[in-house]
Length: 412
Ligand SMILES: NC(=O)c1ccc[n+]([C@@H]2O[C@H](COP(=O)([O-])OP(=O)(O)OC[C@H]3O[C@@H](n4cnc5c(N)ncnc54)[C@H](O)[C@@H]3O)[C@@H](O)[C@H]2O)c1
Image 1 (cartoon, rainbow, N blue to C red):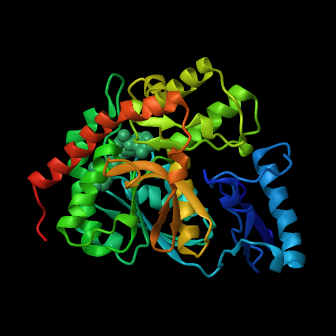
Image 2: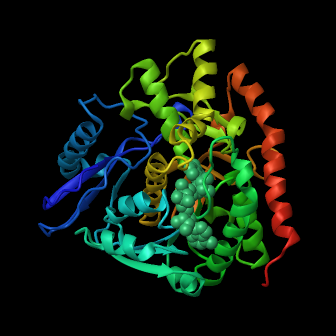
């Protein structure tokens, strides 16, 4: 991630999805131009990987920047011939709220979002300790204003005129706990916070991080329905970390350049419900049966790997903040009119018989524009079996969330 004060800088961006070759989106650039020497002008790295391989440079940032700069020069000459190019609007002024901003995920996430040129205001809400986080962050000389909100009496204000709400509030796992063990505490927290979102910014994109995501997203959907403001296109369970981990582990295993690797991850966000589709890895690469089993198990248990390494001090926070920031950045680009934004996320879905399912989706100004069904076509035998095997557990978690929210309906 490069925070630069150069007057003009461009960030290359491309995304990938599991479409047929003829449907693949082309590589593209999005370009930010600022006239001030002091502006924050780039927010690189937090984006879906490229679907069109460019020659690799020595590092992630190195390649990104180089591709972007090449594209920037090329764009002047070839503007009309490029199929997809998005110029970020430097006047863009999106407001992002983080609920649970003083926590292990909330703090680094706030820092990463503070670096986005698309954000004009960052609202940090928590039940405690958020003033110091906001004071600290507000000293960074990036354009967005940082405002702090503490406790239930300030929750409504934290949500006024907000475009994207990110919810990492709740308790994390301790060793020996499953994500489902968090249900009783986090279900109530998510319910309360989403009620406030429904009342104060019903049009916002809502990103749910609090676990168990397989249940908290259905809870949020029910609360929004009860409030009469449910828009399934704008409610997202954040599963980006599963993709980030899959990309990292596959690149390590196969000795590939990280920037080139993209693995779609579908299903849900707990244990066996996390299904990396290794057969759909870009670039196309073959895996032995042992490699598939080993990588799939590592991706599914990566959260537990961190929980155990932290030995009681929480779950994944830094990598989670990175994944969540990438998803926020993708959402902001979509809101800003970029027509080429794809991410894996847990959403209301008709891809399978389950009402919610994580898969790659196209995100636009109004939220989910399309669910990419081709990712589930042509699966390997291993993936087909794993997909069937995850459905009962995912179904039970979804139903548990819905039942919880229906048992204690909110006041409309
Ligand atoms: N989706 C994912 O991939 C993923 C990955 C890792 C962790 N998580 C989940 O994210 C959540 C947060 O994890 P963490 O490590 O940041 O935990 P943490 O305990 O460090 O931080 C949680 C924060 O939420 C705040 N909070 C609690 N109740 C609140 C309420 N009612 N309103 C507002 N804020 C409230 C706490 O004060 C705290 O600051 C956990 O549920 C964890 O399981 C999700």
